[in-house]
Image 1 (cartoon, rainbow, N blue to C red):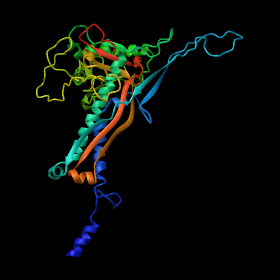
Image 2: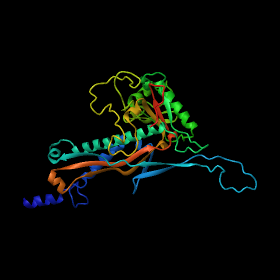
Image 3: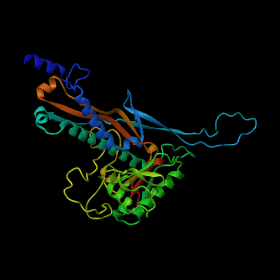
Image 4: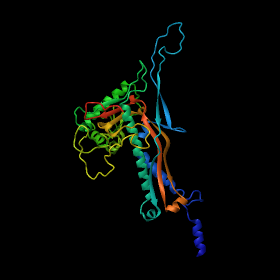
Length: 378
């Protein structure tokens, strides 16, 4: 009997062991990592819609702007040593990395043993969601700032175009933000403005909140949407399927929307679209924008204050509108060894270090509603 037990132990397949040696649970940690990355990638849409750069051995990254130059006629006999006006003008923009952004949880061994579901995978997804949410929020706020800014290239006679702000609707009620026809008109205006400012048509996209997105698809076929043939689940997925004037439309709860993220419930006014609270929304829905660097430790870029987004209701931009620098991409860390023994559990940590800011203001368009006055620059 003892011999049979020994043989069974020897032939047991250690599915968590790497190459039949070492820690029997080594590979399980990689499953957790995969879940965390999956949660991040499925929820972070802004990361692939702007200029992303990896930062090495420094705290900030420099982006160079080159303005336009002019053509001029050559005078016979004159040496060609560059345009007489010294064009093109050059300017710079520096994006600094914010402090380390983390999301973590402690998993007690006994809880993991008693749980009837994969506790670590569930927690890892939520950590990925938290990081993705913050990532998108900062980038969308940076794009909004760019839509209100002048170009960094401002040399005499060579001023480059700046950002664009387009009013949705024509009343002083924020409910215009949900008007399908007004939104479609705003998209065409935005496309024309970017064409006029020389912005490439490649990589243009718009981001609306879910209710705005669904207002558009309910009226598909009558409100000017380009791809009217896309129907069913493909149309309703919210992953850039709908197009207006060559602009792919996404939905997100992370855009600045009347001083909150994604949605705002309450009575209609100039700064509230008047959507009825569906009830039991919890504490993570209709969150107010947190204030920026002066009030939040760890923020090193300017992302604006809550009150500065009082009438914002959507974004349209091309990928050059903003830049994102990553010193540490999305990573996962987990305790093990003696630490796990002492605490009888593991700390699971997701982390990243990034910063965002606008780059080319001409590629950014802010939608606003409820007021005839364009939101001020900040």
